[in-house]
Length: 109
Ligand code: FES
Image (cartoon, rainbow, N blue to C red; front, side, top):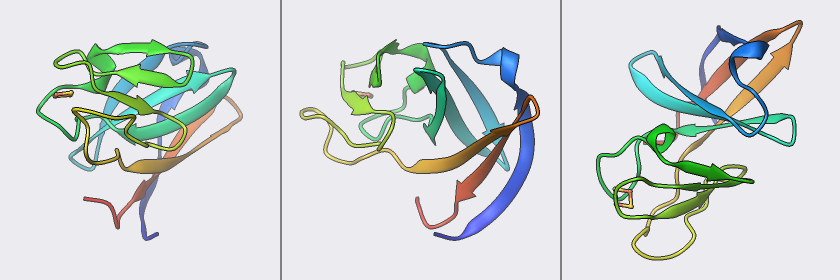
């Protein structure tokens, strides 16, 4: 994994438990989700078409795309069956002192 940025993009209180927010980091659309208190980050654009995952529905650790209902595990980016054929890229997200930082996965498309 190549680290291409590490910047504060949000404050902890901006993403509540069971919630998600979208950000643009170095021109890349990123989604950050909080599941059971822990943060996870993936690309925010569905791998099946042009839909934002943060416009979808988060239930537990599963995000459902608003366009055709494709589902992903936000903790791994793994696609969970048709119509999804490619996983979402995951990024490293860190939280400390009320600040959320993201380290982009530069190897992912
Ligand atoms: Fe997301 Fe089709 S665009 S499932």
